[in-house]
Image 1 (tube, rainbow, N blue to C red):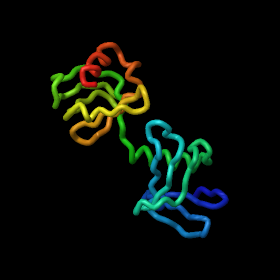
Image 2: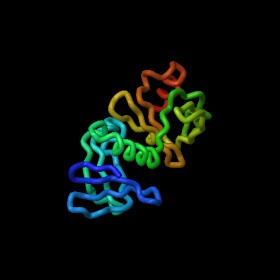
Image 3: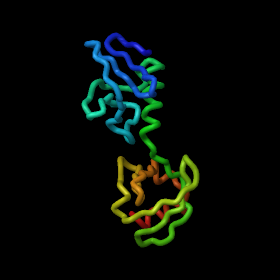
Image 4: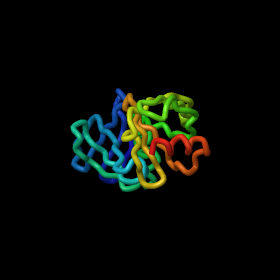
Length: 157
């Protein structure tokens, strides 16, 4: 069990997060949610109940005690899956839909881009690409990609 002056955070026997608030009320099934998952992933994290009601706010993940931070990071890792594209190997066509062969931080994969509108510009120079299965892929810095990847990407932007 982890304690702070007003709250306690721990896992139950089923592995779900439990939050005991300052009033001593225990809330089950707590979910951490990032306010800015791409721009500031370690700042602004809400702990919400299964109905989406915010129960606690974390300004900075680094300010938490180690045990809390580990619990929150583990829970976020289980919920969030956003591969980071490091290289675009090839595309089946420059017209959409097209199949992209990419290298990510989770290995090589293929994604199907339904339309150019599925590539969203984030805070420069980042991009977010949604594939046909609803998986989001992140390109943190499109200028840091190799020349061939940038050339392919430019055809879709």
